[in-house]
Image (cartoon, rainbow, N blue to C red; front, side):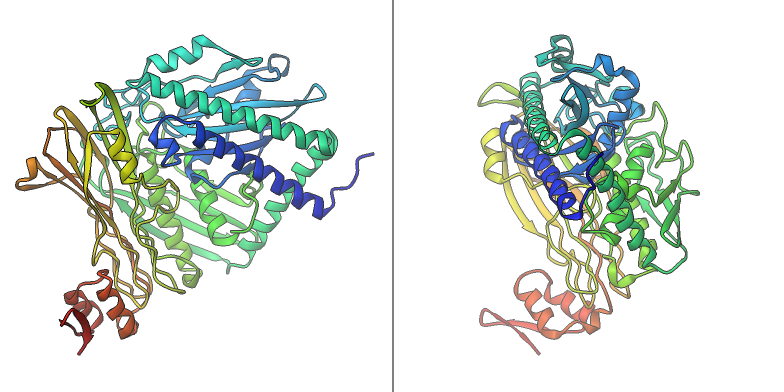
Amino acid sequence: MSKKVDPITLEIIGNLLLSISEEMGITLVKTAFSTNIKERKDCSTAIFDGKGNMIAQAEYVPMHLGSMLDVVHRILEKYPKDQIYPHDMFVTNDPYSGGGTHLPDITMVSPVFVENELTGFVANIAHHSDIGGMVPGSVSADSSNIYQEGLRIPLVKICSQGEIVRESYDFIALNTRTSEERKGDLDAQIASNNAGARRLKDVVQKYGVDYFSKATDSLLDYAEDLMRNGIESLPDGSYEFEDYLDDAGTHSKQPVLIKVKLVIDGDEAYLDFEGTDAQVNGPLNLTFSGLVTTIFYCFKAFAGQDIFSNQGIYRPLNVKAPERSIVNCTLPVPVGQRIDTSQRVVDVVLGALAKVAPDRVLAACNSVVTSAIFSGTNKETDDYFVYLETIAGGSGAHAEGDGLSGVQVHMTNTSNLPVEALEKEYPILIEQYALKSDSGGAGKYRGGLGIQRDYRILSNGITFTGLGDRHKFSPWGIAEGKSGSPGRFIFSKQGSEQELLESKISNLQLNEGDIISVHSPGSGGYGDPHERSKNAVLRDVTEGKVSIEKAYSDYGVKIIHANGDFYIT
């Protein structure tokens, strides 16, 4: 007879699983080749039970959960158990067959056997800086179908019983512009899974196969119970909100509507995206798995921050979206920049929740993954490179205080690339890297500031792809708080007259001396700006976060600058 799973042991096993996924992430980051993974940490790791349920995820990039949500189930559907062996490893990246949410995210999954029984899986995902397609970086502002975005990898084995399957490995590496870097990152993913599989096997052996299975079932039930309690604490009712993406890319300049109807009914939440615009001829489409992942994030952040991040959280959440809409797209539309649509989904869900509990919701954050992609030949090494960076921005103010400045928010959690690492590897000089004054929305609590990052090009023949949003629709405030500043891309040819670029642009040709200036959005304020203390406004002006002019026009505080200091008059 199986032993009962006691709560103390359950907590220990839950934290053991989390520590394994974190060790996998560290292994991946420490052994990767590309700056995108080793510096920016654009990767994630997770552990699954033997039935394919996600039971632990390390705190890396929330969006990556959508890339792993169904992949183990797809493995179990495609491969009979007698064709899955110890030390096998599977690879895929296809958003339309359960393997990802866009093509640069390559997922690897390894089965774990104990006593000849399949007891679990470990998985990792890494954003590769290029996976082929029509432009370097594999995300284009003017893509019209997914075939233009790069190589679609079907669910296949990349390792068989511990040996690399060369046909799979070489096929992936051959179809990128930076094959040696891809090989290094693929090797890092294999190492990460090997480390996780060893650790998970140790845990299962320690507690026994039967007890471990009961413990993982209990972890899922526990997460479900906690999420239901969190939802039940909210008042029943129906709440709606809508917001816009700037446009779909270079093919259309029309705003894209995303709207939600949120119903709280006891311990369950129902979210209906009826009325959201149709899928678009551009890279912003989001698969349904990506939408569900976004809802997972919203409710975990709002109603269950301390809950183990596992699949049990989904059970009280009911999500509905029209097929062929931008939040439930179908083949063959492109999905390369689906993350910005996911970010706007967060905004509309939190906007609806603000009507339930405004004291628990942030004002709108920068809510975009402002991407700058440079490519070309490094004249110092004669090597071709693809360099991807995402620029942080403002985080919204809230009932407890000011928003954070220069941070990634919501569905992304990558680090800024250090200037030293960038300049060492690429023919680019960072001329300015600073928080943007006046970019945080005014309020009793001020929104966080966006970033300005200026890139001077040091070599001819470099291309730039910029993928941004909230250049037209600024991040909104709450409870009379004002909006934050929008983002923008500015091009200066050899430092001369500035040209304002669209929020989405592909393959802009650059030469030595040209400058690309990236301005990320700020964020919304919270509360009436005139309720902000004068001393807080003075501190903002002294620190360069608010100008003297805005201190007066937004806050009604008159400040002068004399003898090197600022004074309230």
